[in-house]
Length: 119
Image (spheres, rainbow, N blue to C red):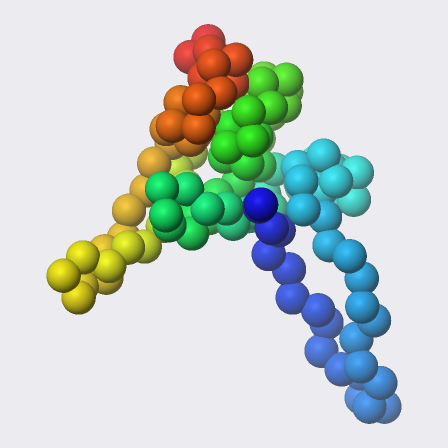
């Protein structure tokens, strides 16, 4: 499951803690909350036994939401060439890697989302 990364505000000067709230976890929820800035929210998601970080387009490709892929690309806020990121360990060394939304859609078997990314 993908999760939007947000931190709670710091405690107030009077010692009162932050108010607990449910954060948006899908691009649609982010769009409702943030409007035009929703494409800039980063999501984390598991792919190929790695924790990856990417934008709303990556989340849509990962979940197979072809309609949202098309909508995001049409908005101009994201690009088909935007890259998601991950780290892996190989022989005791940390390696950084990245990929495009098409890798997520095709790798998860989402044909309609893959085709939307190829348009």
